[in-house]
Image (cartoon, rainbow, N blue to C red; front, side):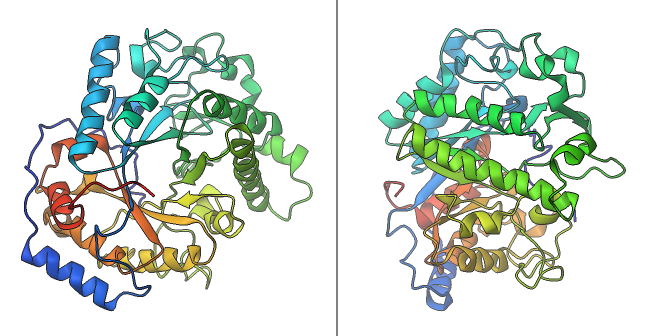
Length: 421
């Protein structure tokens, strides 16, 4: 089964659709059924504070800015419009991508300005997007979670296209080309130390509410290609039974060290990860989920997300549950159940990543054509006390709401604005 996360989601911006509608009988009935039958004794939807977030992707100008090279005034106006839409939709948090490809959406001394701002990597956009976003979000009662990608360097394989002072050009030995992209090598301790410094620079300078990582650690497998970390494994992997164990330890170490670094730099800033939703299939591991996914974070991305929860390295985890209820390989409710059991008793909050981008009247999948599908997701999740909220991918779909699914969620589950926690 192919990964259906955030790759290739460059859908054109559509206009705002759907005035927030009244709750429907079907949505209310689904919510009542979930509350009656689900474990955990969760409160009714909308009756308690819960996280209501949206991802704002900057890579490839997916959400914001809408195009590279816009004026500083236009970029800021677009950001304001997105934050105002979050308020209108009764959301209470935005997850803003500020380090999409080993670059920066703030004046970093360690990495160049992002090309997705001006169209030219390293060019000053004339303002501080992250600093401004924090102020604008907080003024609206929204949390600002700064979304960083640890290891992706570029969406191409040509190092010479990077600005001369880019760390990947200064240290070409840090870089691995793979699948048409460039990545930092997670197996090198100096790489791990550098990417942490780059991210902690923002933590130390801005009143962030959280640091947020997505689903990219080691890259998703590309058929017929090998990720060339032979030299690093030979130098650093001799104490491990397999390369896979060594790779997982590399990512474990990054997560553990980053968690400590955040707390040291700015106590109170939370740390969350939004992984691909399948840790392992139960056919591979009895501790895994009752799924038959073609990708598993443990085996393919070398990301032991279940361990990170158990070790309390995270404050929250937001798995991307991007399948409909009843999906034959990856059923939404089965995954909510598995993740709820995984976080139970750990103190790690569970947020659910929702595939708003798939909600489309023209979808090839019947479930996603139904405007009530996403609302049913929240009704199901309300039956699990461990679920503390939802995050929607992505911001431009929150604006466009192509089949009215977001309006339905708001009407059925978000009767008033609430604090995020």
